[in-house]
Length: 267
Image 1 (cartoon, rainbow, N blue to C red):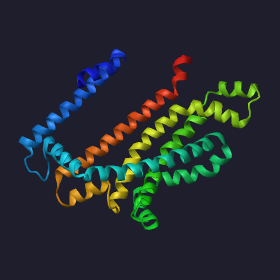
Image 2 (cartoon, helix red, strand yellow):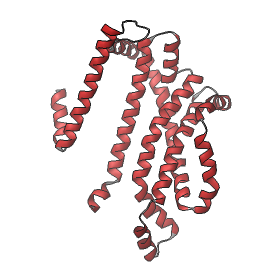
Image 3 (cartoon, helix red, strand yellow):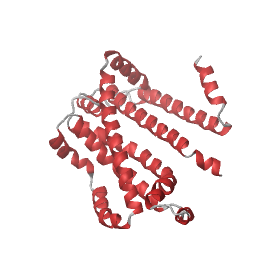
């Protein structure tokens, strides 16, 4: 049943895409097989490494007890709220940076200084301000994710084809119309690239926030598993974070395909 479902799902795809999917799956299978062999026959000390089957066994136990679900939901909530805020604020700031020279002259030095600051070091301060609940995690994710979105949006806005701008002005378009109907659509690929970069930073941000102070979350799971030398549980947390990041990235890529259908029709 699974094989037939996969065949139906991929039957409408171009051959090149199907080949790419097969190669990606093959690389994962090879990696997991090597992990199992090394963990079972080479690095036999369970403190340093465990076979992949032990990680799967630990994940099944944690899922059955509901522990893993609790940690996943805690981290996902922080990532979701932080990314929503970072996307909304980052796009607005990016548009203003790209479209307004005055705003850029005032804000760009501050943005550069903040971007160069190791925001990971801000986690203890954020916990002091917002407590060990979800607020500090959302703030950490927000600060980690907003800069790639704002910077890439600004680059896309400033890189809008000058011919498009000249045509819009020739038809008497207002400044706001030029931004909303010309610049922002042209900047969509840059915005999506910023979102894809922000997802990775958001994952790092939620882990950092949960390492410094939390009651639940995948970062909290990794921290406690490391303190108790529970290597299978530690790998469960790391792999779950990787899967969440990969899923979010693929989702954003699918959204980009939907939003840029006009590029295919224009070409």
